[in-house]
Image 1 (tube, one colour):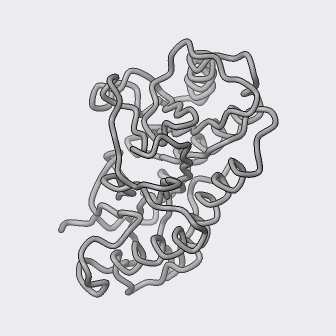
Image 2 (cartoon, rainbow, N blue to C red; image 1 turned 135 degrees about the vertical axis):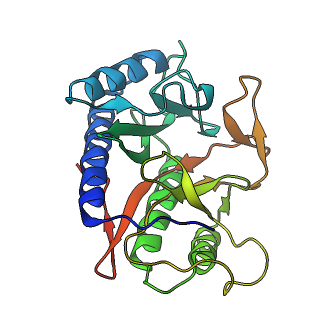
Length: 253
């Protein structure tokens, strides 16, 4: 498995791209409100990214995806396509954004509440965020990615939820998706197999949380991913660089 190691100057370029991602997510979180359409939210995100010299929305056209922002509403956990659907009070909305800048990529995601949301939905959102931060706090140089996946899985289970199967975190750099794949669960039974985390690696962790079943279904639009339990899910993502034996979050505003 060829996992690239980034030079300090390359990591700084990725930090710049990720900073735009984070600022865009913060901006969309501040303006998203009942009565807006998913299309409106995407348009606002694309226009905000365009305000940074040289920045491009990385997802628009990627593998054929039609928009710059993945807008995943309620039961849609990831890869929701923006359309004319109006968001309402008590909805929850996942926002996933990529940015290309100076030949390097950034990528992050949040799940937000629209207006007043239930305690159940807030707990669901909290699980994806808390899992992400727990994972980042537990990264150590020399540990295997499978060990990290196992820790993520166990934390999600400890909160009473299930990780979405078949989708994963990933490496990132000059391409939006690079090696390795980083599931939110242990594949196989051996944590001590596979590549180790090293200085210079940059990757995205993105817990995707289901309530009762982790089995995924893709809707008729061929993009939107839901759980076959039909219940709401949540998703958070940060881009991480390993620098001087520590995990640094690049996707901060």
